Length: 464
Image (cartoon, rainbow, N blue to C red; front, top):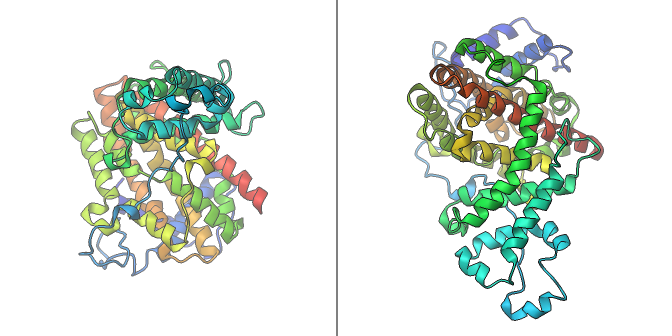
C-alpha cells in the first residue's frame, strides 16, 4: 500500500465521524477508527501550510513535511542532530606510579568496578591505543574488566530466568542499567566518527570480547522471551512469503505493545509536564535511526536493498538537509528547550531499546533480525505518534514543534507496507530460512518497546 492510498483510506474511514475529542479505544476496531480520525483531522492540523508544500487536489498525499525553512538553506550543523546518549567517563586504575596505593584503595575491586563499569569502559576506549593504555594501568586490569562484565551480565540476565514484563520482582534493575550502559559504551565505537576519540579500538580483541560477554545472556533472554510468545521454528512459521507477511503483521498487531495504555494516557490524561518528560525520554530512543537503516542494508541486494535505500532516503529528507528526520527531531528538542538525557540518567528499559537496535543492525549474523527489528519500528510507530501528537496539541505544544511525530504518524504506515512487500516478502522468497531471524527481530523489538512503555507509564503516573 502506497502512502497516498493510506492517506485516502484514513480520510475515507474518517468521513462521517464526529469531531469530538478521541476517547480511549475499547476494541481494535475502535482503535483503528480513532487513529483514522486523528490522521485525517488532528494530524491534518499539524500538516498545515507551514509544513506541507502546495499541491492540487489530484496530487497524491505527500510525505514531504517541510519545516518553514528555505529549500536552499545550508545543511544543519552536526550539533543539530540527535546523538546516542552519552556515557560519563570514569578513571581506570591508579597508574603504575600509584600501584602501591592501589592495594589500599583498589580501583579494580569488584564491588567498585562493577558499579563504575560503564564509565571505566568509556574512558578506556577513548584514551588512545588500547595496548598502550593497558600497559600503563595496574597489572590485572584486563582480567578485572572481563570478570566485571561477566558478573554484571549474569546479575542482569541470570541463567534459568526469562523476562516476562519489566515490573517482575526478581529483576535486578541496577544490574540491568549497568549492563546496558556498559554495552552502549562499547557500541558507541561503531557509531561515531574518529574525532569523538572512540574509533581507535573499534576492533581490538578486548572490547570485542567484552561485547560478546555482555551480549550473550541478554540475547538468550530476548530470544527465549520471544519464543515464549510464539513458536519461531522453521516448521511453525509459514513458508509461503505472502503467508509469512500476514503472520508478521498479525504478530505485531496482537502484541501487547500495539494497544498500550500509554497511548491513551498521552492523548487524554497527561499534562504538559508529563508529555515533555516523555519527549525527553524519546530523544534517546530516536537517535541514529538513519545510521541503523544504513547499516541494515549491508549485504542485501535487489528489491530488498532498493526498499531499504528508499526508506533511508526518506530519513535523509529526500535530499533536503532541513528535512532530515534527525534534524526535525532536533527542532522539537529546541522548541521545548529539552536537554537530551545522558545514559547515566536513563533506566535499562530505555537503554535496552537503544541497544536492541544497534545489536540487530551492527553484526551481520543478525542481518535478518535487523530486517524484522526495523520493520517493527515502521509498523508499530503510527499508533504511538498519532496519540502523542494529539496529546501534545491538547496541552498547548505548538503544531510546528510536533512536525517530526506528525510526519511519522502518516508516512510510517506507508513505510510499513513497503517494508512488508519489498523487504520481508522478497527476502523470505529468496531465502526461506531468513523468516526465523525476521520473526525474532519483530518480537525482540516489540518486547523492548513494551518494557519502555510500561516503565514510562508507571513513572508518569507516579509523578502526576
